[in-house]
Length: 175
Image (tube, rainbow, N blue to C red; front, side, top):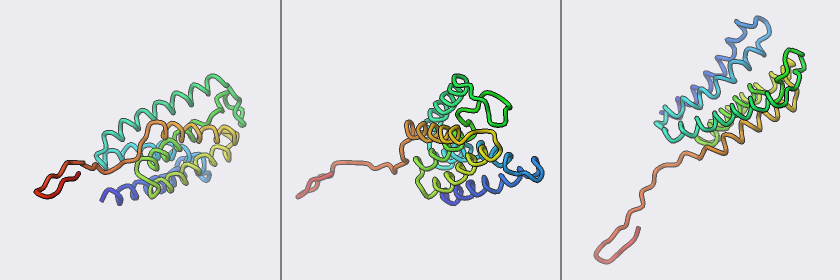
C-alpha cells in the first residue's frame, strides 16, 4: 500500500511539473524546475507520514536544515554573479541542492526503487538551472553534492524492527 502511494507521489511530481507550462507559457523549463525543487522534498517529507516514520521525519528535518544553511551560507559568502546577470547569488544552486536533498533522502531512507526516479527528476532540475542561464554547471554540481551529503550525514536506511529475545526450552537454549 505505502509503496504504491510513494510511486503515485513521485509520478504526481512529474505530472505537476507540466502544470508549469500554464505559468510560463511556451517555456515550461524554468517553471518545471521551480516546482520540482519543492515537490521532491515535499514527497520525501510526506513519505515519513505515509510510513509512520517519525525517526525518518527527524532525520529529514536535520538534513533539510543543514542543506539550507550550507547552501545559503555559501551564496552569501561567495557572491558569484549569475550567468544571466540578475544577482550575485549563483553559487551554489539552491534549486539543485533542495531537489537532490529530497531525492537522496528518499533513496537513503526508502531505497533505490523510489530513489532512482527522484534522482532523475532532481537531475532535470539541475539541467533546467543551466539551460535557463540561472546557474553555471559548477553551481549545479555543488548544489547536488550539498544535497546528497546533507542527506547521507543525517539519514539512515529504514529497517524493520527485529526483536532479539532469549529462548529456553527443556533441552535447548538460544536467541
